[in-house]
Amino acid sequence: MAGRHIAFLRRHEVERLLQLGKGELDRLLEEDEDFPAGSEGYLSQFDEALGKEPHWRWDGGSVYVWAARSSRFRERGAVLLDPSLDTRAVAPGKWLGFQPTSHGPAMDWETDLGVVRILHTTRFGAACAMAEELAEDAGPQGVITVCALYGDIGFSGPALIAADTAQPHLEYEAQWGLVTRLVGQPLPWWPSALRRSDVISQWSPGAPVTLAEVLPDEKETTLRRAATVRWPDDAAKTALVDLANSLRNRNIGSLDLEIRIFGEHGAHPHGDPLLIAARHRTEGYPLPRTDDHDVLAAGWCTIASSQLFEAYEPMEIGMHYAADLLPFGPHTEVRSRGPAARRWGQQLTPCTPTALHAVLADDAQDVTFYTDRTTGIPVIRKGSSRDSTWVFLAPLRIPDPDAQLKSVILEDTVWIRTTDGRIHPGPCTVGEHLWWGPGGGDRPTEAAWVISQLMDDLSTQVSLDDHWHHAPAGLR
Image 1: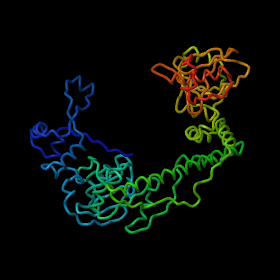
Image 2: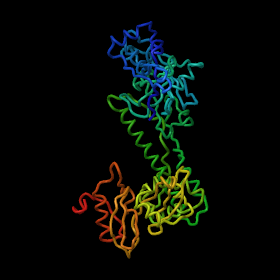
Image 3: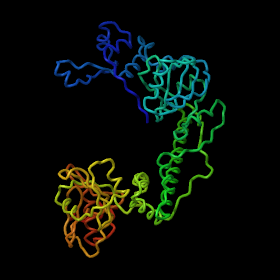
């Protein structure tokens, strides 16, 4: 979602915008309760030391909107917010053609007000940037207003952000329905995945709906490129291709939903009609998926334990979209200076980093790598020895059939001490961790239910389902 670019105006800039004389702004502030409220600007410590007073500033877009809706300053306000446009007759506009711009694909429309350019992008600040460019060089069309997509639905159709070339730095919200009335015909609209110049340039009034391919995004491209690497087994390639296909199918599903939402709004009594100008090709979709969970899990284990450079990026993607296929729980961080964490650290084995270690390390500089031989979880320590943090993926189970639960320690997470003298982070599920620290923590019933299960069988794969119901009263 793009949002509106906010430009703050100082007193002299507001006076210049509204063409006010000396003292007129003060009278306006006193007499008009609808005038946008100002705020004190930021004052640096240096200016404070010099005894300077903070200056007042106003949201320029709000002042510009207020001006358009006032009778006195209407001609100095936002072009598309002039109240007279709602009642006066307007001659049908004319399509002037596709415009490939540096800010996104655009269509120019000649209207009663002048040429309106619609940028088919949700890029933040696009309307403002395009209007500033046209203010310096209007070109043959003489565009007066630029509209860009906000990314959401407004009252009458897709929400728009507008910027006039007369005041290009001031953005405001405009109505799709008004622009539709100005051009005299339903406006074309493209779903975000097909909002490309090669697709949009094919449209003209009366043209059929374009059938276009949904292009692979960066994640899908990364996965398919990694699938060409020579892996130790075929399972890794299968897992990578399966997730790539899943992401493409998901993107197409999102596109279909987007079309349905915006299309239904256009058919609503309060909405203005819009033309769905493009849809995705349906031949060959959805892309095939692999049903064998064991093969996929084996593939992601191969990638996670790999030391190949090419394994890092797909592992990063897999952590977000295929976490349920890894034999580990969620990302967990604990302070290393706690007694339980220190003792656990003594059990860890230094190791050569794998792809999973690299993902856990992220961009940290001072990092050492470990593995917990009992649970198999990857562990890193980041930071100096005095102020370091253990970062790891929580275990799903404690595979120690000869030991039993001896005690529990609550220190940043739930620690399990066993009868054989070892200590482990408490096991949990793929999507649930056991955080326990200053300032809050997880619900006590979660820890209570896990502890109850471990008392019966230390090596069990725990469940957190209905923990509020199962947790024994004495442990809550």
